[in-house]
Image (cartoon, rainbow, N blue to C red; front, side, top):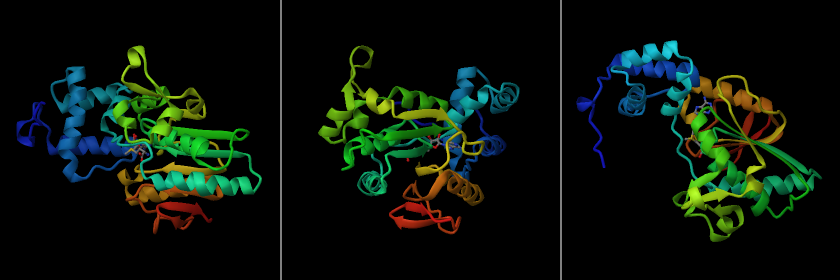
Length: 281
Ligand SMILES: C[S@@+](CC[C@H](N)C(=O)[O-])C[C@H]1O[C@@H](n2cnc3c(N)ncnc32)[C@H](O)[C@@H]1O
């Protein structure tokens, strides 16, 4: 394995000014803030673009970026953190299957509408779909299910749409879940697990920057926006939460990551379970 170069041995010089430029572009286009200690990380992610474009310096890269609008998506794809997992923070899926859906059914509802915002490669989204189709005591066969899944990063969305994962990614899932919801890849997909088409067709994946206009329907029953807000400053989070409240129906739910807390940033949600919020205003 290649050894990571330390800050003193970089193949291309990366100055404080280069880092400042990187973070101001990232903040302006994606709302993402990069703390001072992320300098090595920023370098390692961005230097790949310099190599791909055969550019000698970061200064040359930033000029290139200014002149080529299409490079912005490569910049974003390089700079986002896409860490995710199937059934990450499992209690959210238990709540969805065990409480949210049964309570809708008890009200006579036969439809559900949700959004996985910042879905990365789709593992969160397909976990939602599995919770809906395979974990709830309610039979949802005659339900209208609308599941939107979005991310700013176009490359993770390509993976999400394909629904093809390494066996390692699904290893920890119960055998029954794997049997029921995945197919074993053959041919070019040998050694891969493929999400079954009946799950894939429940989801509409599309690119969406949370800092810009949202092309999602309103009156959502729930939104998963987990491990996304941690990258934003308080002001941006507060604005985002207010916008979330506008698309979630009164009484609908917002699921956030374990280290995120809308508390003090908005009065439109109330904590009703572990990192589960309900719209109250
Ligand atoms: C750490 S992943 C979280 C994935 C998933 N929600 C989970 O919790 O497992 C964060 C995702 O947020 C996306 N993201 C970051 N900034 C964004 C923005 N401004 N608009 C939309 N998505 C964004 C990233 O591309 C990344 O895929």
